[in-house]
Length: 338
Ligand code: SF4
Image (tube, rainbow, N blue to C red; front, side, top):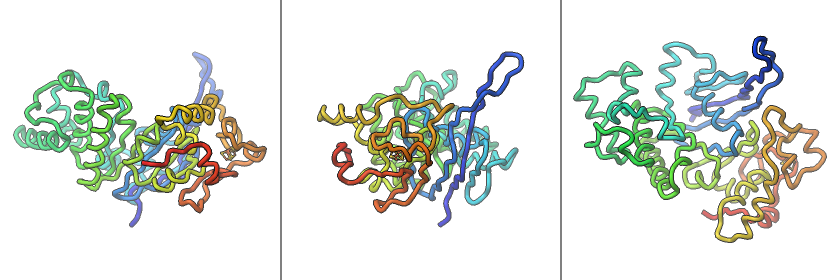
């Protein structure tokens, strides 16, 4: 089966300029820097990393909401990197996004009936009033909202319900690809599991292909078939969830996994120690392996030669000259249990 999405050597640099009248380019934020991966039909791919690692920019590049500096994105075998006009609009219909903040992504002056039905109008699929209402109410039922609340306004719903409204709107056009950009991080912990379960059920029911973006590996643990870990614009490890959680090879993946909240306070101390220091600026990333300024295993080679993604015998691909061993994974207290 050929991939639904192919991403090759994708780069996005945002220019940094100086001066008010004559804006001179003085550098670039290297938000995404040479990222390649496939997304198979029907799979859920998690993209995980700290703020500023490039995960949301990668999603926006796939959706063609941003123009890449270089590289290629293909959708169903078609190169969509430079598509324009009606063909781009047609491809965009097949990809929908759920945003992080359900509060700000819903127009407060519109009823949820018109919010969920909006994509029909945008894509010229206007239905008659009765047909549109039936379609919207069916979507509301699908995501667990009461269809009788069709004429209510966003402020009348809780945070979790508003995210359900966002999901219903994203599903309206029966997309092939759904990109969920930190869909639960603005929600109370008690509500997060409900929304995650809903997304997982919908993915199974409709055979959707999903990209799930999160800053915490624990959130995507039960959602994703495969996981990509990003650090400062690069994928540092990618592979099936079982392999990546069971035996992480990149020290950054190991540190993120050890940082998963656990009952034993001694593990919290370890996690903090493993990820000491701030994330360096993507405008001036460290040489060679970008993680070398924070990596507990760094050696001289790490700052002079860039490690490339390579197959690991554990089943993932990792970009590291000195991947973690089983003993080290045990020592740092990686929480691989589900
Ligand atoms: Fe650490 Fe070196 Fe591996 Fe980079 S290449 S993650 S610095 S051991």
